[in-house]
Length: 108
Length: 142
Image 1 (cartoon, rainbow over the protein chains, first blue to last red):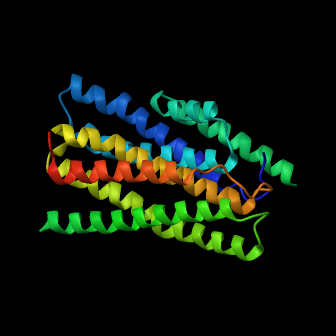
Image 2: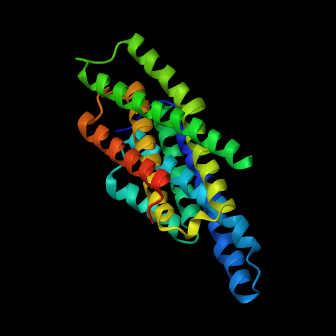
């Protein structure tokens, strides 16, 4: 089922997925190696809560969009699992942008 | 002093979040009970609820989570098991809010007007999660 109204929720999810992807990459790419290799836990202490909040925001936004757009459970699980994979947020952001564009074209 | 202030903010936000969620459940139930397609007046009321959800309930939810995170970090609660159990419950509560919010939005602008919703299931889930969270936060058993 396709809605013919705004695509604002798609845009929000697209940005939130991007931010989630960036914080995850910073956390596992810079903060965690700094903590374990250089014994500098400050970055993990700073980025950990930020990533935690972004993760909850991403999850909330995903289920919100899924309920609004009537996504299948399988697709929603895939989107949620992407949050645990590096670069997963960027892939979701790209997919969501494609969906939003397709919806815009259909509503024209 | 900071603890009292943040805890007060946390509780105020939590009450606003939970009251908003209760209203979502009632609106979804009423939407399901009404016969036929929704009337323009009913859709207008649902849109008002969506605005309330966007500007009051959702920010209250994130402020409740943020203030909880602040207290957990500053008072070193992350080492305790009760908080490790509480965090997934909070995530579940946020997800339930997201689902209900999305369903209400779909009701206002889909051609179907009706969304799948089970009142007793939603109430049972909400109550059990909230009671577990409160019990864990008050008694801190582990």
